[in-house]
Image (cartoon, rainbow, N blue to C red; front, side, top):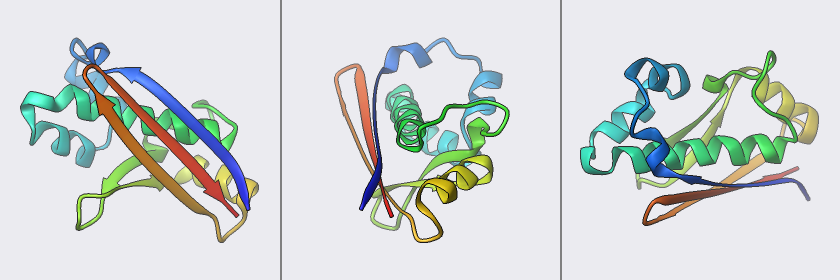
Length: 124
């Protein structure tokens, strides 16, 4: 049973002027390493990761705040390069409240030109 759906669209250019400090505050070390490994498209990768976070928050029915930190939601890649959402901390608690212990979280990311989009579906 689907208990949450979230979608987000972001322009990748907004990440061009972000300082290293701001990026380190928002993104995980693995996300930054992944983006930096493809320097020509680093901002596009960061936009993908940001869209995934925002879509996940929308699917959870919440936002960043006292209970959920930026680092509680991140994107990792499996051995085949497929993106997966990693949920920890306060976001994990919100997921358990919404969908219980056996929740499944699906993530799809796409980008075209200067835009990135992500959708997250949470199943119970």
